[in-house]
Structure formats: C-alpha cells, structure tokens
Image 1 (cartoon, one colour):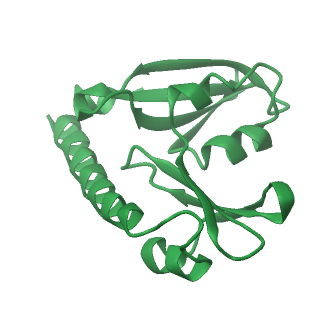
Image 2 (cartoon, helix red, strand yellow; image 1 turned 90 degrees about the vertical axis):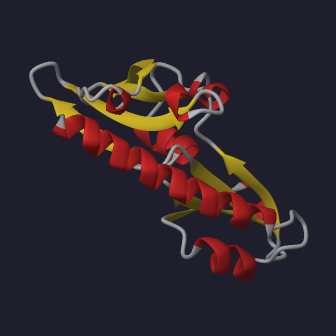
Image 3 (tube, helix red, strand yellow; image 1 turned 180 degrees about the vertical axis):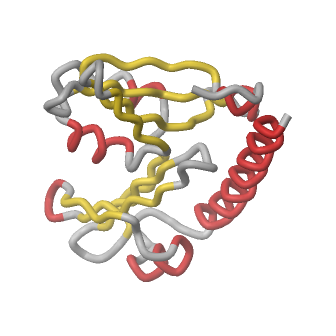
Length: 167
C-alpha cells in the first residue's frame, strides 16, 4: 500500500514538472532565444557538454520524478539552436554493447537510479520515460554495464511504480 502511494506521489510530481516544461518550451524559439532566455526558464543546467561546431549542450534532467531529460544546444552566437527531449525509444536504440558509460550519459542525461550488482560485476542505470501520451505508458529503460563501465545490454520494462512494485 505504501509503495503504491509513493509511486502515485512520484507520478504527480512528474506531471507537474512536465506541465512547467511545456510552458517553458513554448516560450523558447530556435535561432531567436538566447542562452539567458533558456536559463531564465529552465535555470542553471545540470551539466554542460561540448557540442559540434563550438556549440554547448545544456542538460536539464527531470529524473527521478519526471519522464524527460532535455538537451538544449546553444550555438557560438549564444542563441538556442535545438531543444530535444532525449528519453525516447529512438535514442535508446542507439545505445550499443561496448559503448562507454560517458557516451550514454551524454546521450541520455543523468539516470534516475544507479544500482551496482557486485556479485554479477554489473551496474544498472535506469531512466523513467513515457512510451506514449499517458502515464500508464510509463517505462523504465535500463542500461547494464560491466565492471569497465561498457554497455553489456539494455532492456525496457513497464514502470513498477505504477503497480506499487519495485526492483
């Protein structure tokens, strides 16, 4: 019972974050909005990555309660060139065995949960995402790394928070 209530609280918080993000995204325009505009609406980024052609990529993480992680590219001229929600099946399909953890982190942002399995010599990174328009479509994407933090495999399963379960 407690786990179900906890899951419902996380889902409500995620919905609130999502609603704020939708409004903030509407107020930004590629090629027009500046770095200051992005920071005014989203705050300071969790991480800043080097992008192509001198761009900087701002990471805005909505894990563990939300279903999105945003990567917002700022060009050399200080204008926003792209705003992408990166927790998508299309991006997950790009995660391949042997890929280093740092590469996956730059693609997907910080995971919602990191679980080491010492006896198996594995580490699991989980991201919550929606594979459709409803919270009932919530899933967990997991990347399993070996002891060298290279991808072994991936999986996607229904979000246990929706049924009160857990891993």
